[in-house]
Image (cartoon, rainbow, N blue to C red; front, top):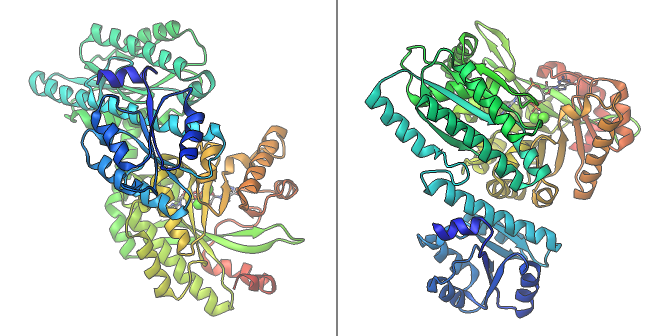
Amino acid sequence: MKELLERKKGLHRSILIVDDEFIEREMLGAMLCDLYEIMYAENGIAALDILKQRKKIPSVVILDLHMPELDGFGLLKIIRSDSELRRIPVIVLTSEKGSEVECLKMGAADFITKPYEAPEIVRARVEHSVELAEDSVIIHETERDELTELFNKEFFYEYGKRLDEQNQIPMDAVVIDINRFHIVNELYGKDYGDLVLKRVGSSIHELVRSTGGLACRSGSNSFAVYIPHDSGLKENLSRYIDRMCEKIGDKNISVRIGIYLDDGSGFDMERRFDCASLACQRLRSSYTTCYAFYDAELHGKELYAERLIKDMDRALAEKQFKVYYQPKYDIRGEKPVLSSAEALVRWQHPEFGMVSPGQFISVFESNGLIQKLDRYVWNEAAAQIRRWKDTFGVTVPVSVNVSRVDIFDPMLGEKLTVLLKNNGITSENLLLEITESAYTDNAAQIIETVSALRDMGFRIEMDDFGCGYSSLNMLTSMPTDALKLDMAFIRDICTDTKAARLVGIIIEIARLLEVPVIAEGVEIKEQMELLKELGCDIIQGYYFSRPVPPDEFAVFLTENKEDAYAYN
Ligand code: C2E
Ligand code: CA
Ligand code: CA
């Protein structure tokens, strides 16, 4: 552990490069030798010798796949099944698309393609893998977070529960998040970010010392504090928070605080923190420090969510969910041509009336029920494509939303195949929208799933593009067939020249990636014309139509019939 901690501070990092080609080894070594001490091995056996000697455990192993003696696949397998070695991230060198997925499946942390990309890309990939691996070891394997010396989450909950069992006194839960922390990190560097975390941590120590209780660093930029109940908690807290901000001395840093005050309802520790987090989530990342309490309104929302969950199965059985369709128009030619539609679900609830997806999708996402709903919608959409084909003789591709959990479903491809078959349509007819943030959350899994789906002939549209913090570097390795620009970018393009330029830049990026850009949320003609000028390919929005029930959608099919045959 000590060795790892030292490495974390930038000391003694080394890398093992395993490749049978001398030139390749040297080239890679040259790109990385100022960051790391480099060790070389010409095949898997030689690499294993070095690893087994354990004199120096490398921070990362960079591994060629094809080598004599013991090849990359073999070595990767050995490393991943060894309890000591498995912590070392392995980056695979590959020149074939197919093996990337296989290596990620086998537990590789990342891959670098041959011929090598620009040195900065290679270096960034290596550094990223090293940091991720070191963070996870340090945060998970010690009782305390190295940086702030607060407990880590696991121990925090363990000790908190013990405290509850022994003392049985009312306890309040507080969640503290640093606003826009990733931006602080990006703008001022990781060292500065660390300093901010330390200072926040030290103020929380002070607080807990004075009130009793315990605290942890619960995420990269979030903290949890469990303290004996105090009806004047907010005043007490604000004193510490003010002092903390003074100590940090940076007006750009602020925190948001969610509080659950013990009200005798007997919630367990986890439930209390769920309530505090819920309150905290209500405070959007802002520039000022702010507080929110878990209160009657939030409680009401929770009850509503619980009711929706309870009613869901019946709603599915009774077909209370209605799928609406919103057209997407291709604006590249002289006149707009219908290119596809997006399926958007609504809930015709017997008691609440028409409920919009904004109310229930996130509820179903948080407990996995979304998978059932998504499948229902996909089925409806597939059946609709068939019906339109039969009635109007045109095939309108329909895009459906694919949730994060769907991506983890090993049966996803199979389920989709069955659905296509049942409805007599093909994979080109059903477009899949995956939100960009899913891509950034779990790159390896997404690459695997999306690549497999594309191999099956599905086209993937990256939804809400611009909201998920994809780095440019990452984008180039992300398989996608279209970028769907988030609505927020479109809103002000006609009044704000900066907003328009930003959209222009994103369209340029899409050109670079050789994929079309879809703009959604286009409400007025001026937006449409400006987007056309900027080179946008496809438009979706109220300007053309709101999402409508299938029978109303038929109008778009008939008016476009002569052009729409292009999609058959
Ligand atoms: P989204 O996928 O980004 O869908 C676009 C949303 O923008 C839709 O809201 C649509 O009605 C709305 N919209 C379209 N054009 C305009 C416009 O010109 N102006 C404005 N202000 N809004 C416009 P909707 O239908 O309320 O859906 C909200 C979100 O719910 C969707 O965002 C999607 O994330 C989710 N959703 C909807 N149906 C499904 C589904 O079947 N499965 C899953 N997983 N999510 C769904
Ligand atoms: Ca969508
Ligand atoms: Ca979207």
